[in-house]
Length: 394
Image 1 (cartoon, one colour):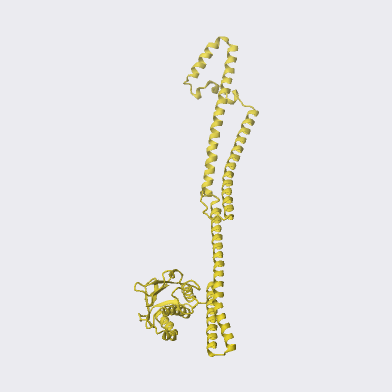
Image 2 (tube, rainbow, N blue to C red):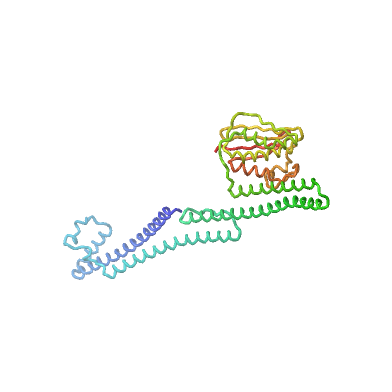
């Protein structure tokens, strides 16, 4: 219960118990005064009979008539007419007054302590419940802390639950980060091992038979390692949130054309064409250079899976919610089991060609998502892989 409701309940409880106490006290006092009244009346009658024995019968008949009801009104009461008051006939002693005061005071104190004890008992129960929950949490329990009502402990209970939930999420994130670090470290070591081994073999062969072929092999492997280093540094900057992106209005068609131009040499060697039809000016808020880098990685992946003489297609459209870019090839498409893992770092699918390190699509995904975008991949109905990129307006 809330503080206001709890106060209302407490006041109601005290008031109801007080009414019961007052009722019982009134009943006791009424009985007490009845006995005092009959004793006073008996004493008066006794005095009358002692002085006038012949009046005994008249006195008894008068008492009998009074018992069954009398029509005498208070203002006609003969005792009051002669100036007598109730206190003249019966006046309780100081002892009686002290007794009633002590009884009332003790009853009030007792009622107060009973109420405090009842309220304290509720607090103890809630504290035990919260303590038990925390003990379970320390033992690995991560269940829901059930709400037992709205009272002074409700806010504390909510804060404890939120804190425990955040701690569990932080722990899970730390465990996941540790696992990812171990996997990435293994993949990096594996990626470095291959070119280092190749360079070492080329150097040994050059010692016995120097050849330009061995130099070219060393150059290619060093270039591979430099590319890996650049990709890893870029990913680490994205993970740390330190990648500086210049947000400005850029045209989608311009980005696609620049990305294709930067891959022109590779496209010519692979005998693959890129089709980018112009659909009018469509602007997105993005960093030109980094967005172009992401598109280049996607175009390169499509190019590697397109047969010689094939075409990589691009299209784009815009609506009030987002701008969508579609890039698809005319190859065999993705292996079904590869689709859930395409954007994972260092993942190499079954149909992956070339000596790629499996990090290009992961980079594209990170760059696009950093700019309020999404990227998905799927197979087309008539074969071929398709990437869909969406940059949201808000």
